[in-house]
Length: 294
Image 1 (cartoon, rainbow, N blue to C red):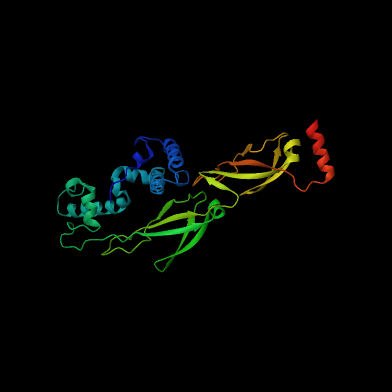
Image 2 (cartoon, rainbow, N blue to C red):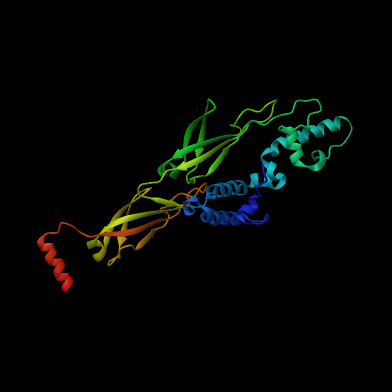
């Protein structure tokens, strides 16, 4: 598998701070989001790579392993154990272990551990188990709240926690829940891709929500108070007098939760749709006629 440079994907330097990583992720996610690029066949794959890069680089421990081992960072723990074992073996023979795999190439070292032809000295090679891929369907309400779900994978039940704010098309990894390893090799991993259905009222774009609200002509002209729905319940909204059709209002913090950022939410942006009254009585028509002449 070709090496994927997470820093290059997010357009940042290796010295980038966590704040710079977060800003770069948001910028790139908005740029390549599949919903904004319906004619780009690679948009979904690019969006997945951006999520994967953010998942690793925003986690200090994962980032440390990635910086040290590159594309083999997911096998860092296995390498450290093997390095310790070889160091102990070399010490028992009165020689010194250098702390690097043969030839100084991590890739060659891992190939011998996980299925290559070179390693062993008479021992059977250890083969890493197969990775599994699954798709999990959620609705927008389910993606709004952190919750647990039980999946059946290869005949086994796995209970996973789904963080609030998960993105449509996002992939998360469940380590060790793929196929079993061979000859003591590690299990593969389970990759779950999330498919989030559209909502009949709210449209999601990143962490923001968008909706259209009907407004009667009387309240649009005179102003008043309007009760509107959000994903977190109903709120009362003040309508300014002489509100125009198509005008917008922002409800700060009433949007979608930010992934893995407890207590942080996007905004809800409402567009007013002014409803013209129908089935008017003769008296009402007279009043509108008077208004039109004034």
